[in-house]
Length: 107
Length: 126
Image 1 (cartoon, rainbow over the protein chains, first blue to last red):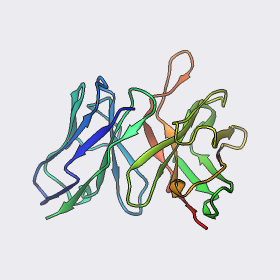
Image 2 (image 1 turned 60 degrees about the vertical axis):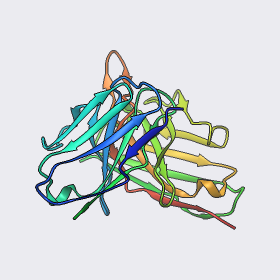
Image 3 (image 1 turned 120 degrees about the vertical axis):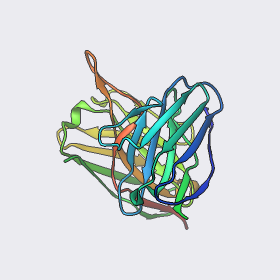
């Protein structure tokens, strides 16, 4: 199975700042990585797939990069609604696997 | 508007069975592969089962293979998860999700999920 390691587990930032979240795969997954946002009281939201393709409706301040084993989710100029938990997921092979999540909180 | 609404969760004893349902609306259900994903309390997300748009093929991780069965009724736009021989480690919130998919001579999976339900909680305990 492909192990997905996310870091950091916890991140505190202020609105307007930029942050990056890392996701590392235990073996190459090409560019087959998705990012999701989890917020209390809302259903999970697909942000990015195939490493860097924004899902329809995802604000342009979100970007994804990487290939092989190392990937990054970057959020530029944080908005109040961006404080949430973020998960990565490899969609290269079975079994599909997720990272353990990064909680982004307001500083 | 796409909606997925799960039901059927609850408290069940170890070794017993439970069947979850997910009613879909707002899209052509029989054009999409569907997937169950779960999240144990305080833990991350875990893929549980996937099914083709026709219901002809199913996919499971080793952790549930042989115990869980995913199925669908396209006439009712409903997805199911039959869970047998439940264990304490199956305690989780179970999410119904839609595979984003794409059409190329047939309906194909993308293996990532563009719509999620709010989830239904399953607690396995004596």
